[in-house]
Image (tube, rainbow, N blue to C red):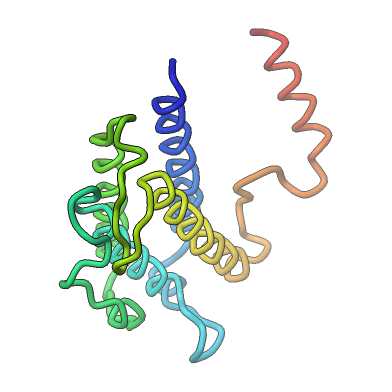
Length: 179
């Protein structure tokens, strides 16, 4: 094992984890819920997903070969709530993630220090990956927060439920002792 391949393994795992948080949140929400927003200045889940997908398609298509801000991307339109169904939103969500995971699967460890552009700004591939990981985690945190507000007492926790930290710790310690 070397550092480059280990980095790629870990970063794929991190992207899969944050995607899973978004998946598990959207599973709990209705068609109506994905369009709820607090006020006119707030984004709803549909808009955030549309933005994430647009960003992913732009950044990860031809990752090493072209600027991550593609000429065809219409970023401002990503913040218009015009996705008619949850099914269409889920397809858009998956399309973006498919682009990301395909690009990461194609990336070779020796390419991690190559220069890539995002809006004309040069980054190493590692910097670009880390930039996107932080960006996606930020927005998926928003999705989870909005979902939790909407569902209130009907929310199914995505992590350790409140008041159950010690129980969870003991389960994890037992699990690791059995290995």
